[in-house]
Amino acid sequence: MAWCEVRVQVSVKPVPQCRPSVTKMNRFGVHALFLVLLVAFGATVPLHNEDEVRQEFHEAMRYGTVGPALTDLAEELDLESLLLGDSIWESSYHPQSEADRSVIFCSTCTIGVNEIIHSINNGTDPEDISNMIINLCINLNISNEVVCTNFIQIAGTQIIWILSNRELTGNDVCGMMFPGFGCHSNNPDRIWEITLPDVPKPPVTEPTLPEPGSPTMKVLHLADTHYDPYYLVGANAECPEKYYCCRAESGPVESPEAGAGKWGDYRNCDAPRWLLEALYTDINNNHADIDFIIWTGDLIPHNVWNTSQAGNLNIINDAVQMIKDFFPDTPVFPAIGNHESHPVNAFPQPYIDNEFDISWLYDEITMLWETWLPPEVAGTVTYGSFYTTYIKPGLKIISVNTNYCYSLNWWMVYDDVDPASELQWIAEELQKAEDAGEKVYLISHHPPGHDDCLPTWSHQYNRLILRYESTIAGLFYGHTHKDHFMMVYDENDRPALVGYVAQSQTPYHKLNPGYKIYTIDGDYEGSSYQVLDHENYIMDLDEANANDDPRFFLLYTAKDAYGLSDLTPASWSGLVDQMKQPNSTLFDDFFRYYTKAARPYQEEGCDEKCKSDLLCRLVVSDTSDKSMCDQF
Image (cartoon, rainbow, N blue to C red; front, top):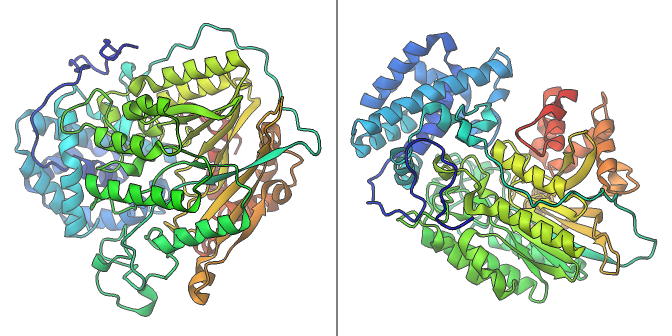
């Protein structure tokens, strides 16, 4: 696709495809309203009361006031848990079914966004609306003044530009930003396809196990580092900001138990330098045979209201330098995460070259990654933060920028049609590999089956990997901070591929730090390069903080833990069948490993709904089709 070629449009309003110029907008806080106020309204107000909802929203837009009803609803909803990533539908407040709640939420979201769009189109002063949203954020006890004010001001200018330069509706915006809450856009232009190479799919070659004694390789998978250079031992881990603590500015510590642990904390805090150094030291001391490293992104801490371009770049540089210092002679193949940008999640299309141009990040990443990657990949990294290169002769890696599938990347509301032509590029690269008889690993931050991956992008990605399943030797992801896998089934429900989702290095939140090491079929003529087994190591935070000893240990090895003879897709699918049985001890084991044996999750446990939701997560790779979940 040519750089300025006319593309499928999301609406009838013209979209500039050739690097538009715009004037800078003032502060505007629409994003906070989307993620907080609309969630509060959408999850609680009966659908038949739409006129009342519209009137209350209209008054809030005018006056920014919060009455007792809204205050009660915010408390009932437990917005803190929601914004930390827990499902809104798990609240015991709601007697309705999930389907009913989705209808209520999405319908009310549509009302709210239409009101915002109406205000923008009528010329309402953006600063007035910004102040109203800040007041609501504070008065609903979503967070304190610092968080509400800073985050709204950071995120707002981009969103007001998008809403001002697109012909959008509330339904379309909510459907794009909240697919994980069951919202769907009725805009037909949101359904699009890439063109696969006009080459018939060859017969599927089932994976064959290597002969005993065949060479193997070891691969380290690091995910979700979330390095915090300002972590302070003993700082308040239960701070007024709620969503991120353990820093000097986190306020006074009111009890000894509220202080941040030396080696990290189960509460809303990320990884200090000395934790990461202990983790890397353990790998060096005990796994000197690592052949290469996969690093699937998210290097920035979770203080999303207090980021900047310069601050993010400093942290990225520090995090990369640590890897270089500890593994100077080991090849590293990175992928970009959603926290690397400022504001968080904001990854504009490459043709956006106004004040929101993302080149400040991609140019820096190109420079940092050139230590590990050949010069010829610089063009695609600079353009869209994706690339392909050889790991070994006959084995390639494709690093995918999945921020172009991420529903909370509000730039996808503006234009979601194969951003940066990345999927089309992947198709061409996979065809080249198939023609050459090569194998390919695909790595990315977001699993394509995760709820926050946009359905059309996810579906097109699945078309790709199923078409080239005999070429693809491995799929590797991060993002969830948990340790699990993702099945890929074909149209006949045959287990075709399996993707591995690696555990986080950060303890954020309620988790132990950890890392994963794969044993893969080695570098020899005819190698499948398939994953043969994986080992998973953790540090118990309670133990480390009590003894001041950052001891990492083997939690489990996949084949032994699950009684698998191999790690083929059929074997993993068979494990799902076993775990779905009532009172499955295999599922109990899986839940322990999934949560890295962290005390908070072990204390909470996993009831039948939790089990059903978790098993569903394992069998969905295409968010446009969750029919495999019907079995649970």
